[in-house]
Length: 96
View 1 (spheres, one colour):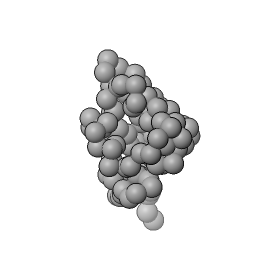
View 2 (tube, rainbow, N blue to C red; view 1 turned 60 degrees about the vertical axis):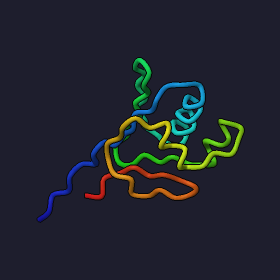
View 3 (spheres, rainbow, N blue to C red; view 1 turned 90 degrees about the horizontal axis):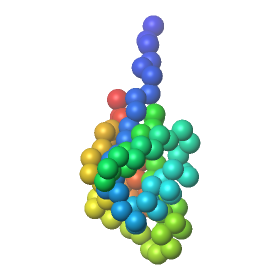
View 4 (tube, one colour; view 1 turned 90 degrees about the vertical axis):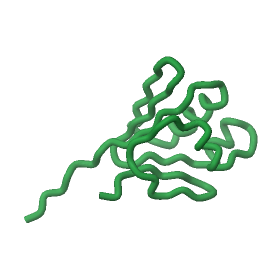
């Protein structure tokens, strides 16, 4: 008999600025049950299971092209693993 562990939370801390607020809004729209916590200069996004960041959603909020590598400039820290990072989406989850 095996016991499955409950999904663990993953998350990312993003530097708070005007452009990143649009990024947060797009991530929030694409992820049900996302917890958004505003702290001085930082926005922490936390979700159980996996966190998905879609290029198309962010481009729609920003009103300009956005490449996923730009997320590195917004990100302060994260917890979880980048299980997918390609041209159209980023997924943070735990592999184990």
